[in-house]
Image (cartoon, rainbow, N blue to C red; front, side, top):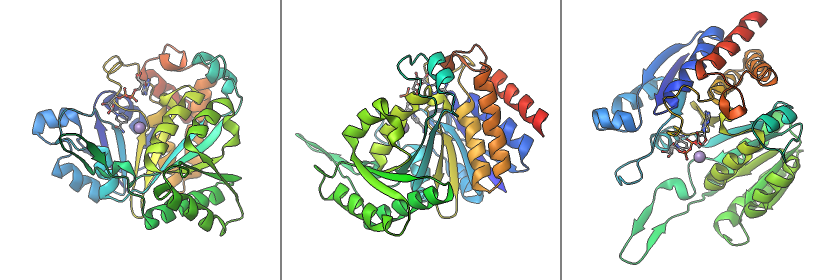
Length: 341
Ligand code: NAD
Ligand code: MN
């Protein structure tokens, strides 16, 4: 199997090497390195060079770090959004899981009001449509963005969510939307959700996105699997990450028919980049998602056990209350896995 590895910018360059240590310890992959992002742009004049696209095409799997955006430059196209579109990676899976360690993770992360023992929610975000289609225009007195929801797009993401729930013994799928206001676009999404839900023996319900923002803080365990449109999924997954100590613990998979891209949910974190203190756990958990994807679940579980061991023993970076460096957390994970295999 070929894996194209794109570290990107900022802490992407710090966390991906730790993930690669784990990937190479447990698997036998051909690693193809490629460049993208703001630093790459400054060097070669391209955010996502043709060469990178070719390497990504050639690979079965892409492991992506994070890139820094460049909002002032209108020619800038986000490399990650471009890759999702290019390979039609329509399903973005974001597990929000504290491994049953709510008291520990909640406390060390400083969330005194949140010590819910077990949080285990999976957010499935449509990844190719909605406001992220990049169709914005402006004239003298207004700026307009198109929000696209297609029947095909809604159907395949909803079906993906129910299949995911079935395969992973999940009890419920909730559709998150704003169909009370966005009657046509989210109306289509919600209608599709209930239509497809009839094919499954899994509980199906729905919530408005604004209420969901509140429920996630107040009563997160009413959720099991969430399926939602692109932007709501983007925002809700960052919010939900706070339930488990922040972005340092949230990996994600972008899945299409023939290819998958794995990336931590976090960005390039310029505020901590270069200090060697970025939490590599999200990137390392991406490797466990890679092993799940290729049906090597034992290896995937072993990686999660290693992360759990680090959390229980305070072997963490400062964002989770520890004092280890990025590399040291990676080393602890490697040490644990070596003892277990
Ligand atoms: P961010 O995710 O980079 O950081 C948000 C906050 O979380 C920061 O305080 C950061 O220090 C902290 N954080 C994030 N990851 C962490 C980790 N692994 N360990 C410890 N702390 C961590 O989001 P931002 O600051 O809003 O954006 C920074 C840049 O990243 C922007 O240019 C943005 O566009 C880009 N971005 C890229 C992606 C991507 O590549 N997929 C995703 C989100 C943001
Ligand atoms: Mn985001």
